[in-house]
Length: 312
Ligand code: NAD
Ligand code: MLT
Image (tube, rainbow, N blue to C red):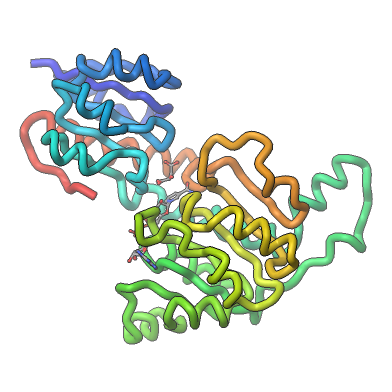
């Protein structure tokens, strides 16, 4: 028996070698499919492998008569309709830890760039402006980093921030005082973390409960001049509220890797000099892309052959 696997987002070639070597898998690589083309192609396939670009909606799942498994080469499964998958007997697997390190490193790069205005200064220099007075930053040492969501990535960020001699305080519904103490960080309620932090970084999944948790009311609780990092998911922070908080000088700066709608075109937040951004690059390293593709390829093969893999 041969299983047909559609890969509809770019995945690491090294990472999909388990599928190529499986012997009973036929791979079709078709990225940038329109919604209509995906609907047309999907009934032929036993498995679908995606990153974050392909929107695996209820319509796609209901059209997928032969689909047994959806593999997400990454952590967030918010581009997959999990309810529709469950109702239709389609297993969803992700790669929960293959990109943890890359995402944590990117968060620290964004945090440091934000504090020292590196992208703004570089942009000015590229335009032949040697402007040392305009780009005075702040040190991270001694500042308080508030982490909302202390899972895999949040915990790695906490360890790195301590290395920068920051004080770290976190909120996570599953975090206990004892665990925080063992990690050498502070522990607070959502409000306490917002009130204490000079920098805030969010590392929750995007869920109904976390959508716009950083909103107008949350900004009102923060210190004046707070700086915000989002390398998790667009939608955790209310973009309109962030825009207003920056214009009103409540927030001194924001570093964003993710947006409510991606890709973005002429986003109003990018018009603000206080905002620095990358186009969803948190997991974009050779290592992370290889890791997540290998993990998810193994799981997909196991499931296609009738075995069990871990679901998100
Ligand atoms: P994780 O599941 O290990 O951690 C998420 C944490 O968020 C958990 O500890 C959970 O208890 C906590 N949480 C849930 N609801 C919360 C709430 N209301 N308030 C506070 N905390 C809450 O996931 P992870 O591997 O750390 O990844 C986190 C997210 O980062 C992913 O869901 C994904 O969306 C995003 N991500 C982005 C990139 C990128 O390229 N920018 C890369 C990897 C992951
Ligand atoms: C993830 O959820 O793992 C990230 O968004 C990384 C990605 O797939 O781009």
